[in-house]
Image (cartoon, rainbow, N blue to C red):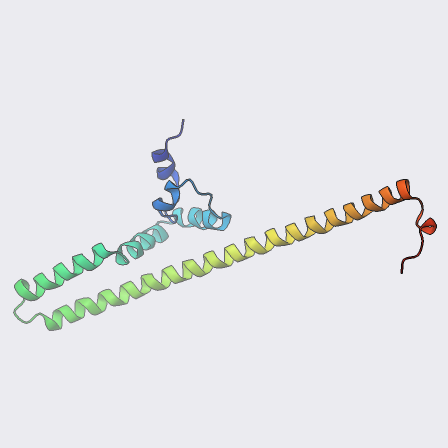
Length: 154
């Protein structure tokens, strides 16, 4: 028997655990993108850094580190601190762009999947409509008679 904890361990990291707890069914494009990203170490690392950088823990950690730096580590912290913060901003902006690229790829995959599903549904509905029309014609032919025997209502 599979437990919920086992399912969480096996699930791709792209789907937040909070979404998996509800037992929801996820879009196939989401699952495919999650599988693709979970297979690549660099993408997994980028996802984890991006997730941490977008959290309040990141904000609090930086507030504490920068406060300690300014108060205790250097008598004149601004030049070095500015350099460190600038370098961190460069790397974080790169991770933001990686996240945006991932989101764009996901949206494209989802749009492609939705288009294919809608096209299949349209073809199915068209075929069902044709079959209903043929059945209706057959019922009219059998129970009402040939179309030439019907009075013209036009």
